[in-house]
Image 1 (cartoon, rainbow, N blue to C red):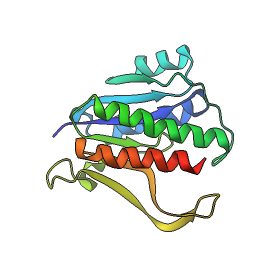
Image 2: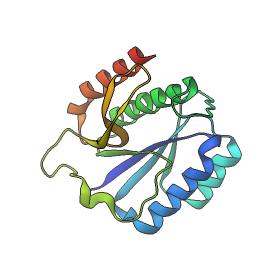
Image 3: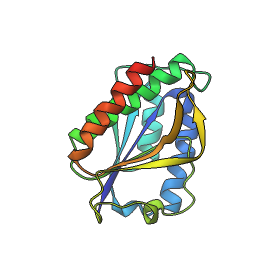
Length: 171
């Protein structure tokens, strides 16, 4: 089964995004990828052109935002995570193949499809559980991490809407 990928990028993460894309194309089976959707949360035209020139299957999704952040968990970082989730929901509503969301600061070392189910068992979503629990700044325990998330079908829309509500309540 083919699938789509989704990640977000801004100019501050462009170098990490290029490392990620290079590792993806070098170490994974990209023949099964229909599209790589990049949520644009602040990319200049020069960086978009650099990505388009060097990588195939790229589709930019405009957020209308130019988010810059310096530290993990600062207010701008939280805003970028909010838009990651909202843009992902927009993409999954307009594309009916499975979509895998990955963080742009990851490095692909092998074909990760062996670790996920793309409709074989008909899971609506697949999430990544943390080995070590973490805490939000408001002391809520985080057992899962959204750096690797799969939405296989429209049954996952309710989960996505609840996730967005939860992020909005966090602010």
